[in-house]
Length: 180
Ligand code: HEM
Image (cartoon, rainbow, N blue to C red):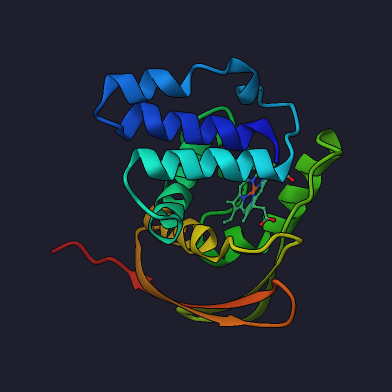
């Protein structure tokens, strides 16, 4: 995957890991953190494993946290203008994911982007079909949706159903958080 994913991992370690020695160890191979380079998925998954181990978590525990972090990282960092352009509501944002990923892909020809298709949309409910050439990313995608609930100040619930291949159907139920 693209190095920007590696940089998000590095950023998570830097911001959240309490041990300076662990933070320094992640910097040891700068060649892994070039945003515009593509890396074999095995390299990316190896780095994800290493980050999970650094937090003493297994992958199903770590990946949702990384998904949450990715949304904040993208919204605060160099990708902010793209994120800000994707809509002011959860349905608008999810509805523009494919166009955004396609646009990004034009400048990153080696990328294999997932797709997110809205199957059903009504007040407080979205059913989204996620398709990818990769397997094992379900907890990451759950974390991404949790990050989007946070972004739009929603409280919600996520149910997942496996479809054929790696495809997954996410049923998102949500409501605005009302401050007391
Ligand atoms: C400005 C924001 C974003 C940019 C620039 C971006 C770009 C990318 C890139 C370059 C990849 C790696 C593909 C590859 O190297 O083969 C990727 C993967 C991915 N993106 Fe995004 N993305 C953004 C936001 C999001 C958001 C908001 C979501 C979902 C809520 C999302 C979902 C995913 C997922 C799940 C993957 C993993 C690959 C897979 O599922 O096969 N991305 N994205």
